[in-house]
View 1: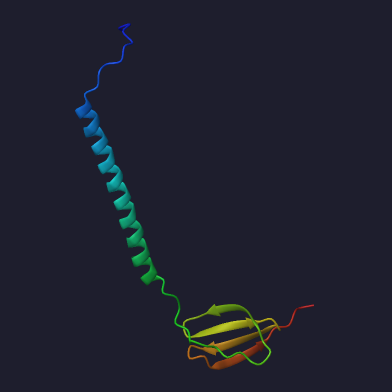
View 2: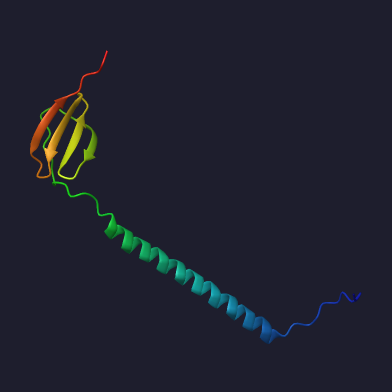
Length: 103
């Protein structure tokens, strides 16, 4: 092992070359990350478009929705006054169920 602790001279051309390589690598990584983000957004936004529902559901007078669930050919709305309203996919009320608590 040598006891020479003097810094070795560095070629300025090598430093410029390394700086260029680091810059190119940084730009490439940023561009790749942006491409991945764009692909995720475009592909997954189409896959999870959401369920097909009517534009507007008319609830009975004085009711307020508390919860919602959907099946293949109907959807249900649970109201704050303990009723379950079952609609077809066209938004027509099919059935109304009164929920009572077991005491």
